[in-house]
Image (cartoon, rainbow, N blue to C red; front, side):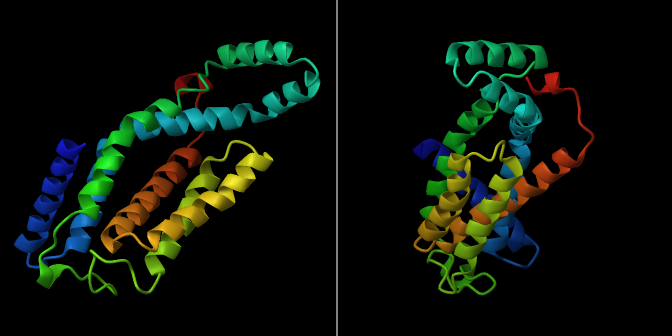
Length: 215
């Protein structure tokens, strides 16, 4: 993890150098550029993940019918569900694999930005005087909670009570821990969420493709 974190810090230094070379040295802009670059690199995995979630959403009506029909026979329900997935060409676990692959990189980015040493004269960004410190205005924590909520809302596959609770708990949790995280790290999270929301909106608005492509 230290190795990956070092690579991310080197990448952040590179993008900061780019801003410096054009006469606008800014760690905030460098974090935004790094976030976009990472999201573009991971785009193929994001596409696979979103397609899988979209396919599961499309199957929700049939799944609910089966759950109601076989609610007293869990073994039969399991077999019918497996047959439904097979006929539709959907693997319910395929949406998890891309996220698992991305996790080491996301953790490395977390430590890289959290522990980054900024040049003192350029560590301010927009309303924040120091990206190494928490946002004193609470604007970024609120944005982190709001963008997390919107991103979850886009990918919600069913309206179960458990999912509804997560829709409330997770954004509040992210917003709460963002109160104590460095502003630079929360900036990364917000920009990453916004980019993800845009990606998902673009892919969801496209005409429905065959569900089998989600495999």
